[in-house]
Each structure stands twice: as C-alpha cells, then as structure tokens.
Amino acid sequence: MTVTKGESTPQGADDEGDMTGGARGGAPVADDGYVPSERRLERERYKRARARRATAIAALSTLVTAAVLYLVVVDAPGWPRTKETFFSAQYAREAFPKVLEGLWLNVRLLLVCGAAVLILGMLIAVARTLRGPVFFPLRVLAAAYTDFFRGLPLIINLMIVVLGVPALRLQGVTVDPVLLGGTALTLTYSAYVAEVFRAGIESIHPSQRAAARSLGLTNRQALRHVVLPQAVRRQVPPLLNDLVSLQKDTGLVSIGGAVDAVRAADIIVGRSLNYTPYIVAGLVFVALTIPMTRFTDWVTARMDRQRAQGGSI
Image 1: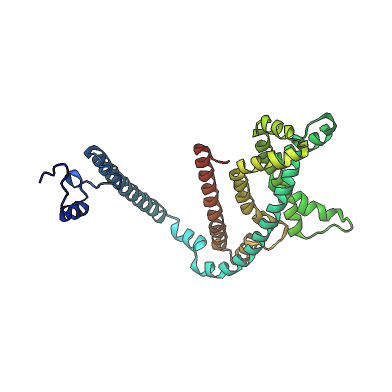
Image 2: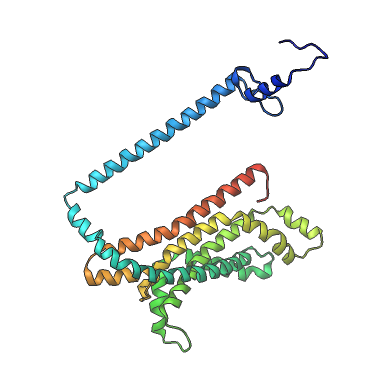
C-alpha cells in the first residue's frame, strides 16, 4: 500500500511493522532506524561460527593431550610403584588435616612479612632516589643492601639467619625459628621490592616533580603526594607477583624446625617413608597461589586497558 503525503498509516500496519522489525529481509532495526547490511550480518555469523569451531578444536586437542599423557604415565613400567609411593589415598587422608594446620603458619608469615617487605622496600627505594651530595652515603648503603640480598640465594640467607644467629648466643635476641625465618624472608624480598619501587619512582617524568615544586610543595611533599602515588599504581602488578613468590617461599622456614605445611608433611614422610604428603602440601600451596595469580592477572589487564584508553594509571 502506498501512502501519499498527508495520509496516515493504519494502526495495524504500525503494529505489524513493530513486530517484524520493519527491516529488509527480516534484519533487526535499531531504535535510531539503523538497519545492518547483509555483509555485516554475514560477517557476524562467520565470527560466531569461527569462535564455535575454535572452541571445539581447543576442547578436542585438550582431551587428546590429556589422554596421551595419561596413557604414557600409566603404561610406564614403574607406575604401580610410583602410584603407591606418591599417590596413596590413605596417606593423603592422614596428611591433609595436618598440612592444613601447618599452612596457617605460612599464611601468617605471608601477612606479616608481606607488610614488612613493602614498608622496608619503600624506604630503601626512597633512599636510593634521594638527591644531593649529602645523601650519597645513604644511597651507597641502600644500593649495597639491594645488590647483596638480591645476589644471595634465599636458602643460604635462611640458613645463616636461622642457624647462625642462635649460635651467637646474644642476650635478648630470639632463637624462635619462625621469627628468624620471617626475618630472612623480609631481608631478601625487601631488596627485590625496593628495586620495583625504585623503577616506579624513576618512571615518573621530572616535569611532575617540577610542577609540584612550582605550586609551592617542598621536595618531600612532592615525593609523598605526587611521585609516590603514581609510582605505586604503576608497579602494582610486579608487586603482586613478588607477594605470590613470597607466599611459596614461606615454606622454606621449615629448615629451621618451624612446623608449617611443608614440615608437617615431612614429619609424616619420615615416619611412613611414603611421599604422598609432599604431593598434598604442594597441591595446597598451588590452591593458595592460584587466586593470587589470577588477581594479579586481572589487575594487570585492568591497568593495561586504562592505559590504552588514556585513563588514570
């Protein structure tokens, strides 16, 4: 039906057009009257088909890989003995509650040492970035600290602190392996975190500090209110990665006799000569680490999107 100028469209026709979308060939019509072209519709159908095909291929390849690995392991000549020694359900049930009890010590070490590492690392980084000849000795000491503890293996640092400090028999100095192990972890990781903070501070353009000084802020105020907030935001992903590593390395305090998750598993292994408790302890650490790792990935992706869009970083 042709509608000439001045004529009105029947109400039924309007309703029919609303129900059908009023588009050519059944294509949906947006509220603003836009009708997608056939080429665009075809491209969207192709993208959906390709995504479904990629998902199916990925699922199939994963199943095939898992089946091949399973057959290789199960068909190995020593698999029955390995299964009995490392994957015993009996010893796994025995070790799990004790490993969880020891894990609470690892979590406490992570919280306390993580806070101490962040504070000490920040102070060392600020000391290395201080300007002026009067701060030269402080910069040298901070650089020597980071160079020494970044180069010293953590396991050796733990042995020196946990075993060497009690041998000195100093008055008023603790011999608790938990406190000494936490001190060794803090000394090592604060050197790594200090370099992360220093990289963030030095990534701030000098014009930021100059602009703060032009507004009447002192050097200390410019560092505190302008430079450090931007530097910390930029370095959040690597800082979280260091905390993930610290969480795993808290298990090393067991070398001094502290009963954490690793030591709890070691006690059962020493009594039973079955290594399943080690597998249980490893899986518990993995379960604790994965959420932190995924959170780190999420923060990194979020900051990358903000940087790409020109948002606050």
